[in-house]
Length: 469
Image (cartoon, rainbow, N blue to C red; front, side):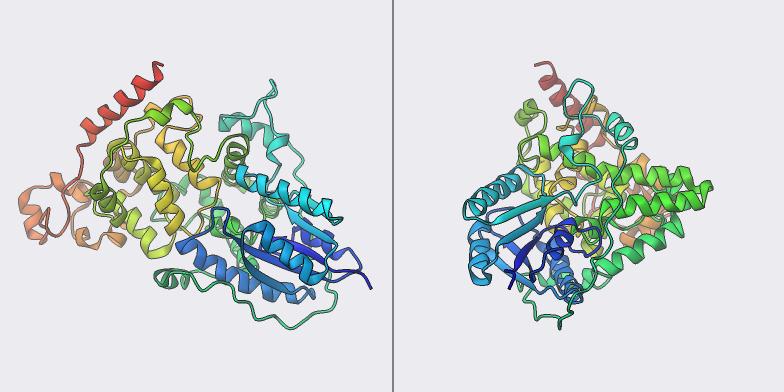
């Protein structure tokens, strides 16, 4: 009788386009799927943990249709896997590759250990459009600027996604103790979402059959429902970037009038690959600035200011709306993410790592590459040619991208009665306007916690001093 194989589940909670799972099921023996809460690596917390729990339950039910049970373990990766190998008498291990430096070190150690023990260990490409070690400039170096990265990637032949493996002997869905540690506060947020592979595929098709046509021109307006909302599904691998790429390309072929909009959408999907590229070629970008000299920036230690930012009490309405959207939904519009990050790192001069950690805990879609990569892009510590110019003004940005105030009124209801003229700058409104609407600055809504012009100048000076090195 053939010995069983183990397939490790990581950020690939899906049946379709899952090379490791497909390879494991090609063998004659039974297959067991393992998810390990790896205590030796950075793990999802807060909102992400809640999503992961539900996704594991959905994935267990889907795997059961293929005759594959899912086990959820916890501990250091090697020890947990060794215990499972011994318990099942497994002779083969499969997984899809990961690209963070700590993850790669763990997986290299696993391969060395279990191959030395006589097991067959195989890994596959399943989490990217193209693997980061295949992308390099004409001089043989990794890309540090997105535009040339995208120009190269879009010429590549993106592998077609694999189908769902054929069913073998379906089993009853196992009772899976996904994880009891998810925070209670995340439950109401999660109730607003559908979780799992089936939901991810449905969301993709709903987007391609509807809002994608307005994507290129309207994606920066947070009150409009024109974004895909696929990012949490991608973060946990409920759908692969290759599935998205080819589904979008197929739609563009059928509806050529949407080609430009779909091209813009795919460039945003490829941004995830770019951040994985940054993660692969450098020390952990959640901890280390990509440009080493920016590790000497004089960040301010101000817990009270950080707390006001976290609670959406900065006194800048569109920033506060974004932070409250995050707390109420587990996500935030991408344009607003840039604004809240800019205020924290440039105007308040608070370390980007504190903002990244807050997003890691409260976003459903935070992942090891995009979350720190995007924070470093806004903070100016990343591989960017002109970080000084990336200081967003939350007033002018609000007036441009939320001119009618629909987004701010949704999440900052204490300002809902203000005319559009003053909604993004209530601190400049005449006293009579505020009084007529029962708004008392510093009481019902905070005054701005920082002077935008002065703080912008201080940030530019701090960066300039280091750039002269």
